[in-house]
Length: 519
Ligand SMILES: [Zn+2]
Image (tube, rainbow, N blue to C red; front, side, top):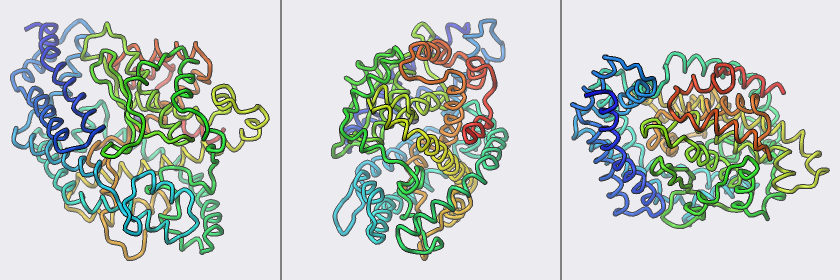
C-alpha cells in the first residue's frame, strides 16, 4: 500500500471512532452517571481496539522504513506510529486500564468532601481557603479536599502497575518513559530543563516564600515554622495566596465572563461566539468541577466545559480555555486529518498566554474597562503578581513531574511520604504533622492525565516566548493574525519544537523564564 493510501485508510478508520470518544467524553463530564461512564468506556475501547490493529501498525512501520518524499505524509506516518504504539498491547490489559481509569475519574466527578458533616464542592473549599481567618476551618476545608485521595489511591497504584505492564510489553522502562518517547519528548532533555528551571527559580522562590511566610504568620498569629499547607490558599499551592496576591474580584466581579471572553478574542480578530454557544459553562451537580476545551471532530466542533462564577479565577480560566478553542478552530482544515491537531505543550502555551491577559494592564483597561488611573496604580503589583505566580507554578510542576517519575519507577513505593518530601523540597511548604494519607492521589491529573504536567511548564515557557515575539494581544488583530498563520494553521505538520523555532525565530529555552522573572 502506498503511504497516501495507508494514511487515508487509517483516517477513515480512526476519525469516526475518535469523534465518538470525544462526544462520549463530553457527555460523561457534563452528566456523570454510570450510564455515561459506561458509554465513554465503550467508545474508548472501540478506538483503542482500532489502534491496537497489529497489521496496520506493521504497515505504518514499513511505510516509514521505506520513506516518502512528501514531508506531510512522512509527518503523518510519524504521528500515526506514535498513536498506535501504546496500543500494541494485550487487549484484556488494555480494557482493564480503560475501565479502571474511567472508574477513578467517575469517583472524582461524584466525590464531595465534607466540612462539619456537610458536603462541599471544590468551589466551596476554595472559598474557605481563600477567605477564612479561622485556621481550624481552613484545616477542615483542606482535609475535605484530600478525602478523594483516600477513595482512589489504591486504584491509582494499581493503574500505574497496569500502565507499566503495558509499557514494558512494548520494550519501554515504564509508562513514564513510554509516554515521553511517544510524544516528541526526550526524557534526558526534559529533566535537564527541569534542573535549569529549578536553578532559575530556587533563589527568587525562597525569597518570595520567606516574605509570604512572614505575612501568613502575622495573619494567623503563629510562628512561621507552624505554618502548614492549609495556610496557603489552594489545596496544592499552585496559585498565589491572597496574602501576597492581588484580588481583582472587586474589579471583575460584576462583569459578564462570556462577554469579556468574546471581546478579548474579537480584539485579535478571532470570533469565539460559535464555541461559546456549544459550551457548558455553569456549575451543576454531576458535572466535572474543573474546566477543559475539547476539539470533538477536528472540523470545527470545539467546546468548552467550565463552572463559571463571576470574578478573576473563572475569567482567567475562560480566557485560557478559549485560547485552546481558537487554536483548535484555527488549524488549517485543508491539512490531512492526522495533522489537524497540535502538541499539548503548544496548545497549553497559547492557552496560558491568553489566560495571563486577565492580569495585564492593557486588558484591564481596554477589555474590562477599568479607569486608567486605577490600572496605573495596579500596574507594579500586576507585574510582581505575574512573576510570583510563575515561580509558584514552576515549583509545583517540579513536584508533579518528579513525583510521577517515581510513581511509575515503583508503584508500590512510599509515595505518601515521597509526596511530602517533594513538596518540602520544591514548594518549601511544611508537611502536616502526624498525617499518613495519600494526599498525592487527590490530584486528578495523576490518574486522568498521566505524565502530562511538564506540558504546562513548557506551556509557560512557550507563552513567555510568544509574548517576547508578538507583544500584547489586546486589540491587536495583527497579533491574532500572527498566531493564526504561524502557530495555529500548521497544526501538527511541524514537530512542536520546530514550530516554535520557526514561529519565534529561536528554539525554546528555559532562559525565557529568567527574563520574565527579571523584568
Ligand atoms: Zn489548558
